[in-house]
Length: 279
Length: 258
Image (cartoon, rainbow over all chains, first blue to last red; front, side, top):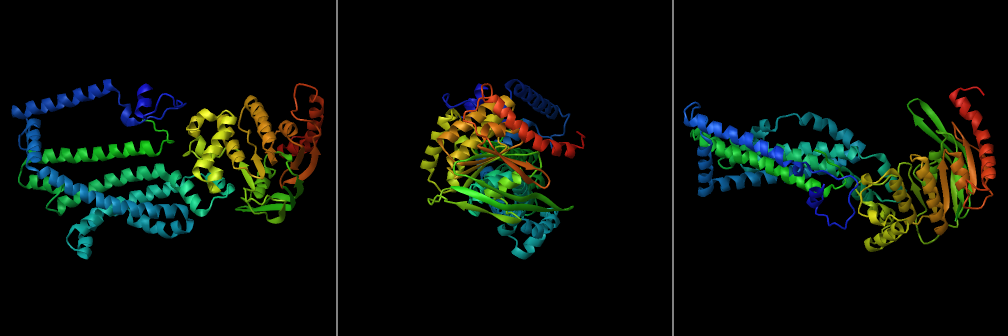
């Protein structure tokens, strides 16, 4: 209880909540977390021993210490920072473009029944297409360059954002529109005071899905068609059979996804304080 | 400010044809009058209230508002059955919502909301969100929102319907106290006959499907009406009179022979 209140940065003179919200990220219990660390550490140690004693082939399973050294090396030489920067930038562009477009169209489609009736079949038809399969076509149209890559990533972010936002607007109880109308709200007020805040929790979960999808597509695009970026680094490591570097880059990519999700979770915790979250 | 409802009727179009929810409702609500509307469930009480609130258009008939205040203040505010608080707003911002819709500046609307909340003892909960409050507290905030918006007519749709009877009793008293300090015309819908008799200057009895006005019963008793003391026989008498009007209909609708 106390640490939850601390976590929300409340001063003691503020009224205590009757029902405390729970942030799953802050709800990790130290004892269980310690057990997780022991299991992970044990597995890594076993791996280290198996590789060193030759039980595991060093080419496919380089020892964790070797991987760590490869990671430190790529940090020292600056290749990691450069590739990470490029991947992040691509992802940010794609997420920004696709996310913003999905948000706007989603709000409109959630709000207007007519708009939804017209556009929904198109979305339903286009959504299941694996976006990576569109890369050749998009390159044919927009050329082999950064624009095509960002566009594919944007498409990957667009659909989850759109669908979540639309669902978010549609789940707003009609009673809130009646409340707004009974107090004389204008259309603009209805939008900013009811539609936006009412759908915000769904918008945030849409953003999280969009982020994960954008990361997936960024790496995929870089694997098949790029000279720089984490995906390219992974592919390059595979082609030159530098498996330690392959593992190191994979680990960084995983941390990128986890970090992004963590940040969004924190964001959600602060911008939708009325939403009770239970782990 | 007073208003009259003339020949109001409302027909809903549904998949199974037309449903008449309200028929030929004609009545007046006087200046600062507390009018209770009582009737069995499904008799069109809420429909009537929403028509007065302007949320529904009547199929025929009209409402004439007389001597509306010229300062452009809100004509009516509705207190919803299930409080209708916005879950994404804390108590203070929910209370100030009506003023915000009327484009009252932030500092002023928060000050007015806070003043009212403190008067009714909700001051410590200004930063609390609705889901953290009990049902009774939520409805108090719903009522605070309506009063702070300073409407000329206060419309209440079974505001205490989902509360336990003790809470209801206390909140009724609080409502009367606040109403005495902020006199408004009130239209209060309930299915509880006793509640209607304890609160109203007059009780409008409706019968159902389609909703018709059966009678208007005056309650010539001073407030506060004490259920325990000398008012009890008079209250019981009026209650009995209203119950007799509704009894047959309730039995018929349940198919119970008398």
